[in-house]
Image (cartoon, rainbow, N blue to C red; front, side, top):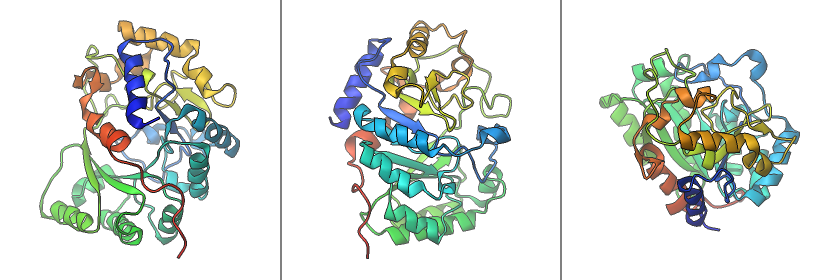
Length: 332
């Protein structure tokens, strides 16, 4: 089934507010590791306790990879941590591809792009790789990424672009967050990356991660919801410890719907906890759901109930553009 047909089924479930969707989840977030090499102020990963920073066990990853074909889902092989910290990342990209993932994404802070990791990424590439650098301006980058150096980060991005070659996977997106200072340094950095073949640049507003960053300047106090959230009809996020959450904003698993490894994902997707959440979202009764109640994402602009901030990217990545060439690159 095409991405457009899949999305149409998803939208019908959402617009009809079905408590038991006819379609399986469109997208899965798989928290392959919750470890990170940075502690950025706009990310709640820094708030995880030491015991919560861990790699997802291989047996759990294998179980998930074995289910994606039946679901027909896209897979985001990242969530709370930096996926390039996993030396076996390439093997899991291939395993999820073999398992039937419709499209595989990675999201990285781009600070670990050394020669060995670049070679591994290009040997077993995801379809899409988003490089989150927040800013191309030196001082702004230093504030957003304490301990990281913009020059070294961009050196790695440039090596990746040069090594990849034109028309080869993965498709690369540069992610910038918040207001940008487009001075001479930032403009020159962007021009250099585009000249090397960077496909896309996305600019996003920071959000409060379901209230996890409330009080840190990331968002104002919650307002009454503007729209019904699409996530309960759209996807699932599997944390590194196996808890299955209704969306990636539930960073700490406060609203877990079940546990992967104990029940199939489709059963969790259609289970009582998920149905209760959809009913509450449809009615605007979020008293029992603290993450939803505090989240600023559903207070943003929407079109036909869909968040406009992410709608174009969804259409470009999942509908309009075909994925990068499937499978590993040929040797030589």
